[in-house]
Image 1: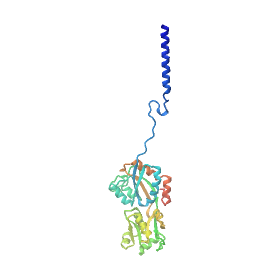
Image 2 (image 1 turned 90 degrees about the vertical axis):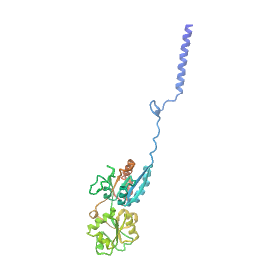
Image 3 (image 1 turned 30 degrees about the vertical axis):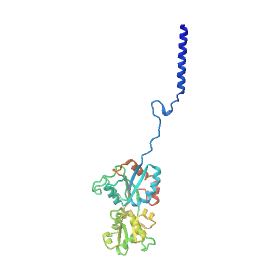
Length: 293
């Protein structure tokens, strides 16, 4: 009897071992992503949609509009909204609280007026809108003397224009004094020793509120000539009579920066970085812009 009980106990223990082994065989082996102590792997969430507001000089409208389509592929979650106008107008809008993530100016002065790190003699109001470390000199443009189709006055260069303005009998369009292209033109007039106010009073100079308005007056033939950027001459199909030298008006540098007031500083910086890539620079160079040397 004792031996029978012992035998039955052994058989029962063996049966339990076989049952547990069978149950274990039915359990699927843990995958690499489900090893003990780790959560199952999952794909990361898509990037949140972001709207970036870009204030840019009017002379960049064609190129940035083209780059907008390219950037939709590079950053599909980002929607670019542009505001194109004279740099002076854009600066004032920013100062007055307009929503803006990236500012691209056609002149250093307008950017300096918003940059606390700029010379106080330029940033006279102590404005602090530029995000530290984001500012860069993005592009260089050229100031040109352009004439309407057929060039009725036969204007060939700046030297000749200066003589015609001094003698009277020519009608020129230039940008307002708060517009970078107007400021460059003022330097050219000063280079030739011409009195802008006297010429304007004599009816030899008219003005445009931005470079696009100047280009339109030249294209329509309402003036004998005008001073605009080579990029605008290209986009409007205008004839370039002459190029201003650095001695006449200095370099034409377009600074760009992310603004401190931006709610999307990382995305704004990423877009600014993209503008310096070879693919974006190819678009800029196709209309006459150049990287800053």
